[in-house]
Image 1 (cartoon, rainbow, N blue to C red):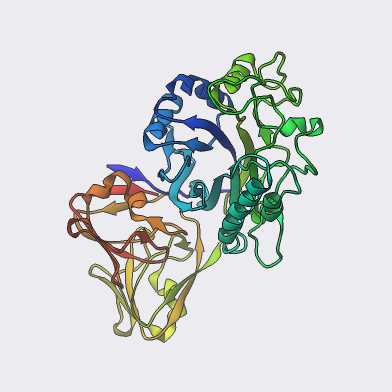
Image 2: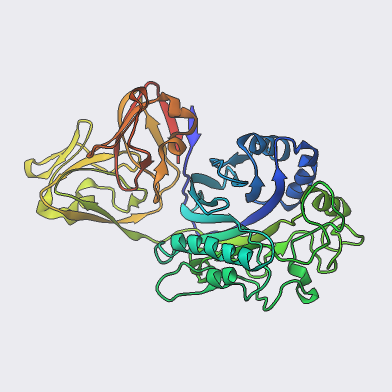
Length: 464
């Protein structure tokens, strides 16, 4: 069986993806009466990534997937936290899911979804939020605390990280502390968010009617808010790295509250005429939720250049791998930066032992892990490029596997449906272990640049 993990291809084309965020309004296992409405909206928009808020349970998540989407989509791992939750769906051919990290707040979790864009191998972090609702000083203060927690995470990210912030922010004006904290550049890191829409003052204003997302209905029905479109609660924000020219960029003027033609202030979205969507879509938006979805386009640049790849090594034995491919795969060339520090490189009987003139490895293989012994703390350095699509063959018995990712990958995410065939995983040089039979799970994430010993009860293939 083949499971797909990361596909990376080189080239010179430019790829544009459509990102969508949608508050589903308390979507439970009893919400099947609304799934046809959501399907109409999503079929019309045809996004590549869909992030949702107010998903209630794994059962409701499965219901949404089965009745709204199809098999070209996959679901990211769901975390059922306090109150309602976030979820992510993505097109299989474009993205791989690399993890869901819960960021707790007093009310509900903020979710960090780690996605890998398959054509280029770029990592995109997505923060889905649903901040405290309603007006009033105490609610504003709670939203500010929630944003402080989020900024604590994004402030610690490396400069140049590509990340998005999306969801239901429940912010009413540009002077609210939560909004100020979101967009303020503190000068010491790149943790702030960029808002492509400049709206000063109170946002419940007819001047800002093209950007309002709640509520698409005048009258109350099925729960949620009513009163017509007059609030901009739902947003898509992005990092400074995406704002600047680079590997991932926001497409100017692509942000749209779906169905909002600017002519429905304090009105229902399906009041005829709606000049931006067909009547059947306007009706679906009206009936599905008390929020409009928001979309934006982002460009991913394919990589045609090389870069310097580094693997830090400790004196003694290390398990190593790489997610980039050496430009020159000759093993002597790959190891050349180590000089006399290198003692031995091996992979299950294949050896590169330069002091004795032994070389049965010949070429570095990106789909293999290696064990290396060095005399002192040092760094392996080589020129590397993005690889073409490769496969990792897992054999029955013991394997020495690489980690084909630039970010840590949960063990369960890496192996997917094949996790049941994994008997033992341990660090090639370390003490962490994943051993289900013995109930030992000290190894939870596979780390970039490392190699792991894996014992499987069956052969299978991972394509990346």
